[in-house]
Image (cartoon, rainbow over all chains, first blue to last red; front, side, top):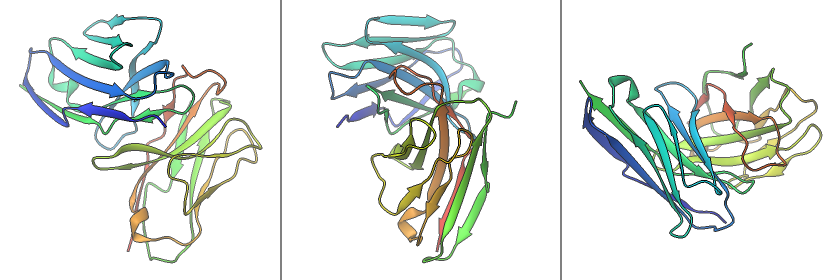
Length: 109
Length: 115
């Protein structure tokens, strides 16, 4: 089955800096790659997603890139703010969604 | 609109006891899912249901059962709880299951401790 690896497990940045989280997947048939943000005590919430026919997608300060050949995709957050502090999960899906282990992002004011 | 609600919020349970975690959604979504979240392992799918009346096994189904009598409710039952089932459990739903690119909406979670 699909295996998703996510790095780093923790990431600390200064407010205003950029943050990058990377994921790799094993099943070349996966065609949907969402990113979820989980704040303390809450369930994960979708922040951005990308389909396999697209290489990059942006939404304000967040962007996701996908390299199908290398089977990896990344989340980029620019101009980070303290409210970006959370755990971020990547996932890969061809029907059965598999999640990465998560990245705890801390943005220091 | 509440979205997805889960009950209880948290529970401490003696090993060997039976426990049902409740999940209700009001979005009329066809598909529903149960995940467990453990530190360092992310979210792992326990069981899913593509539509009312059908269920399927996920990545870690052993020790759990589900039912889907109607569109809105998707309870998860631990027939005889064991300490390794200590986890945070999330219920989720999505509008359709036939397409893989389909946003899942998550509930607030149930923190379960089995002693």
